[in-house]
Image (tube, rainbow over all chains, first blue to last red; front, side, top):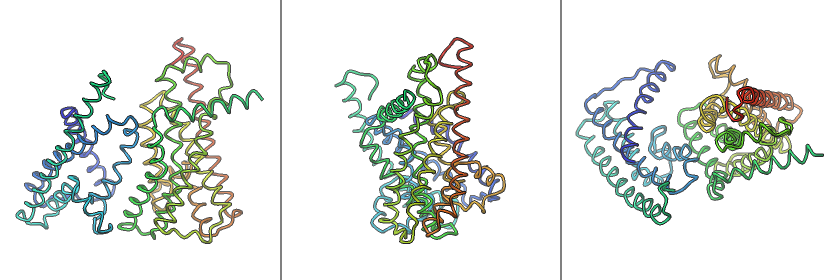
Length: 162
Length: 260
């Protein structure tokens, strides 16, 4: 599963490139990366963070037959809490805990900060550290979920995993 | 009478088929959680970067909750091919138009419920002011919007016989509705080609009418908008029926009965 997700994510990098290019062309927006090295590190860590999130979500998708129908809707709370589209400062304070627990929040912060170049590399280190920690935590959550998937498949004697 | 019976039976079975892939808990989440999340996201985006007051986005997205029929209607029609029931439909002497339109009948009322729930959440959670609303007209606007969504579902389910698959088409249709129906961006602010697309979509005029009616506008002022939206929706559904007829004719000609 991890390999399949990795393959899917590599494939979808093309979509990211196309989306940025079309967006920049359509809205006459200049894409500028002020600190390319820091941005490359942020991209790599963000990629792994999103992969770990997808791993946890896909286990839930196998455990519930209808969850896949709502995966596109589950993107909404992630967009809201991760600060991809609006700053989390606009949200009620109690929701910030949810943001801090999500790897995509730290990924968005690292990407925004390194692309904007307004944050010195030294100040990016704690963000990267939190990104790595939240990624590891998500992987630790995904592991027992996959254990549950396998246990259920063994109990029901099916290879369909659902 | 037999036609009415066929319509009702098809409508009921098409609605029950929804629960083949949707559990009751997920259904409830789709009724309450989805409109709430959608209104929250777009109200925040609108509040952060948009030029309209928050109520503009809240009301627009409450109306957009009427998109719900798109998914089950499109999936039900396209699934005939996947589940192997299409040959029975093709071989059946039943009236095609009745079979086709009945697929969306109950889903339209289900979608109307969703818009109702979305408005309730809009008032309770987002303090949408509907104190001067013309409720008779507003409910009519909600109904026309969900009819439009059902019509898109009928069209996409038919199109899925020819290109891609129903879920992929429905996901893209939802994005188009979010962007182009005036729920989140003023139609006047869209570039000309996108404005033309917006006018060709169902729901565009019912959302505009709902804005007026929620502010106390009269039904007489908005009836033309609602009538036009219903006409556009009917056109989409008829194109869907024509696509199904084409698929059926081709599958008969090729002797496959379930594919082109």
